Amino acid sequence: MEPGRPCAHCTVQGCAIYENRPEIPCRKFKCAWLADGDVIPENMRPDRCGAIVMFDRKWNGWSIVKAVAVGDLIPEETLEWLMAYARENKIPLLWQENLVVDGKKYGAIRNRGFGPPAFVEHVKHAIGPEDIMRL
Image (cartoon, rainbow, N blue to C red; front, side):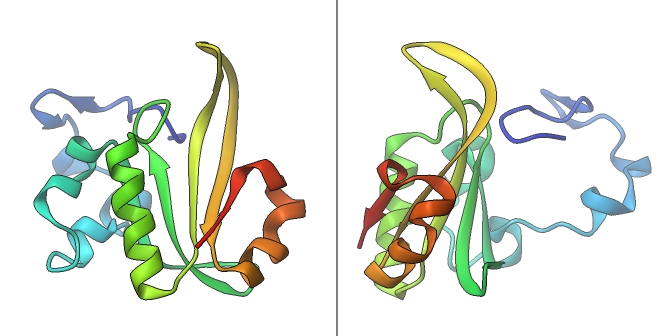
């Protein structure tokens, strides 16, 4: 499985191999919507918000919120919710989208970030200063 591409076993009815799904990642992985039901509102369910959200992730020593686009891009309203959550909880946000420029897909993943100044300084070289937004 890759960011921005649905699982080959995903159907309109759900998982086609649910009873026989593999341990990793399917049985072990829990996105924030499943793991922290009270924190994530119903409209942030991955199939509704366009992103898989993960809390309690680590990135270069930082505790972060991570989001991965379900399609090419994470919808603006989802990013707004994620940024508000990050701001309120004083935790950086990293998200991944497919690289799309002027409607053309490049087959690459684009990492983007949002966070406090210290986080911005730490990551600006890793993912590019144009993709970092300060809290």
